[in-house]
Length: 239
Image 1 (cartoon, helix red, strand yellow):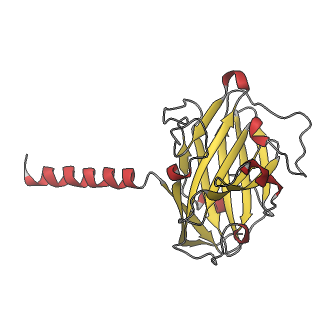
Image 2 (image 1 turned 120 degrees about the vertical axis):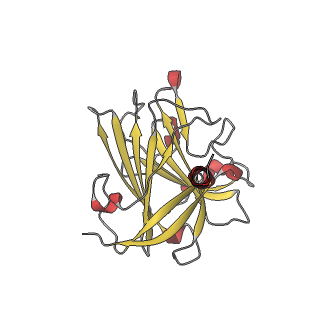
Image 3 (image 1 turned 90 degrees about the vertical axis):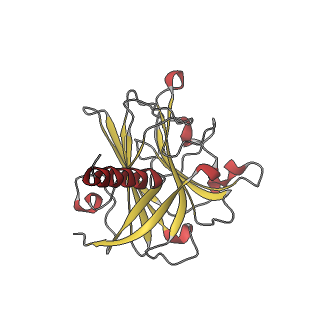
């Protein structure tokens, strides 16, 4: 093989390794302004975010037809997440209440963010959930304490919106989370968080559990398997 061919091979291998090395990183792109929370992935706000995908089960096996897209933006006050969630059959809670917190929302179709700012105490993090019907729950999790689910009485002040496209069989959920509920630092480009994204999809008879970074366990709560979220300073002006 000549020298030119070897150069192309080495470049391809380097690119492949870079992609593999970054497969546990999501970048949250800065916005100059906060916006009214919305779920349109074609909007200028969400188009400025680079997506990642959750597409395996909790043990890393592919879950066909459920490739979940996640995007993130940040401002001086808030961090935003958008979920695009393909589904087969929705498992929805009867009589949904989008105004008040819904305890044990994870028993139904839901998208979840686990996020922590303390890299020295990885078992302490926050959990945020949104359902296709706009229900929500936020939890302050500390796995060092018994009954960590009791953290649902904590209130972060986060907001959600959601909608279902039944023709396309996709639902969309968006979150706006105040940085003050996550971190003592002021938000700045270069700040990093420990993060993971999950979904529960479908009724119990054929429940799909979908993860970004598979915990390699039957529980999502394995913080040493989380990935990393980085705040990046690619500024996009919103209107």
